[in-house]
Image (spheres, one colour):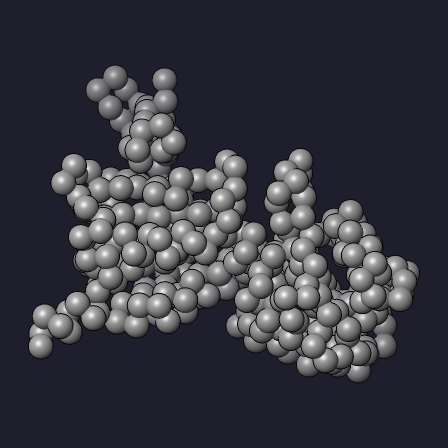
Length: 313
């Protein structure tokens, strides 16, 4: 009985690797998914079972504490400052940066779109950014039912635990002092969830919306809500001139949404697994290590060394 309970509450590192990797698209230049692997030739991920996993945006004191308490596998969104000396032996660290930003923040986030009232199957992907034709930076879709702006705003803020940098075009105290009548009763027809917020991206959203019948024209877009991360003044000004309502939730806040969603997915797939979610702010760590030949700058050059740190020349 005890053995059966233990097996039901554990998962192999190989199964966790495969499940998490399948969440993300493969993107050129992304960080290695197997960011840190155990320093042991006898390590076998298929036969190494764990009862817990830790998820964090960055390596923090809480992340290391979870590892040192016995958690043998972790995930990082921004792993760049991982101190490998703090990673216990036989621990595996997984990482994803570009793919995470694309599908688990305010970008081509199908799960978030569904929760906000869109039908993701009918949404239109905004693809191509900064010279990368494959990079998806967002989606635009019609609401299943036309809904008052106040209700949609409430859904958005609920998803992000009430945190935001600014809500614009709603005519209340959250709208950063905008001098306009209350617009909470406006009816929204469509939502854009976007990972970029410049006039060029706003124009692309307007063009897609008009081409697909979401808006009558590009100059009157008060039926459109633009959900993004950080406030960008040129993009905000351009949007408001065209009547678009905007909610900027903040860069860190949308990353936290991604960690929470990953945790939900893991608990659904591996019900007996303990999932630690760490939301500490990262503390700066010393980047220089003193060696026999003086100070050497440590570079996480994982691409060519199987996860081992390499000292720069």
